[in-house]
Length: 32
Image (cartoon, rainbow, N blue to C red; front, side, top):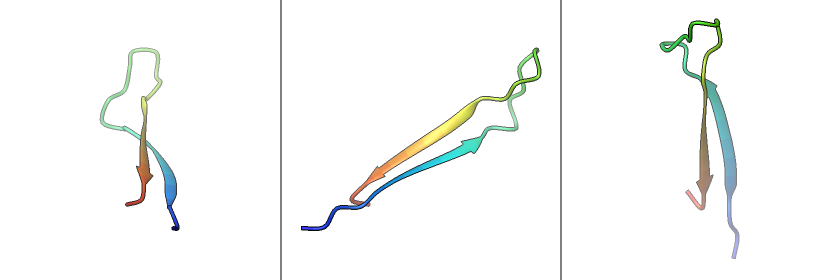
């Protein structure tokens, strides 16, 4: 039985904090 696992990171550029940083969103996919 084969299982797949992937992690995707992307920057959420629409939201910029006062100190100039942007939050990083992550998505983990297992068997999908």
